[in-house]
Length: 88
Image (cartoon, rainbow, N blue to C red; front, side, top):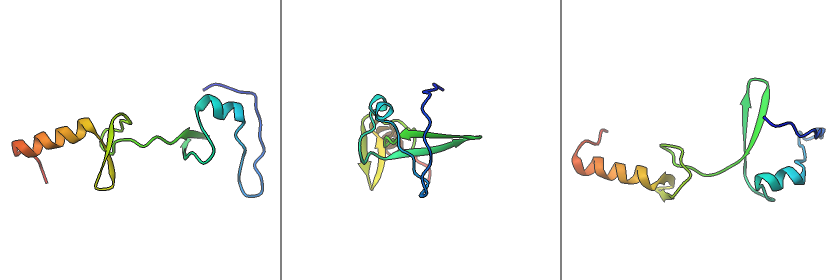
């Protein structure tokens, strides 16, 4: 983890302002979704990138029945169905 030396206070509604320098470095723009994680006693913020529901890859995704699937997993499912090895 990289220390920035920037300290912010949380307001009455539980909000903090991320410094513009940090947002620029991470490519976070106004209204971009941000994921919130907890790791022991730390809070981790990360720009949300939609990813494949099976393998987690964000590369070459397609929407299938409202879910994101990468092309690789989509093709593997097609092969399993064609070969009759698809489990229900």
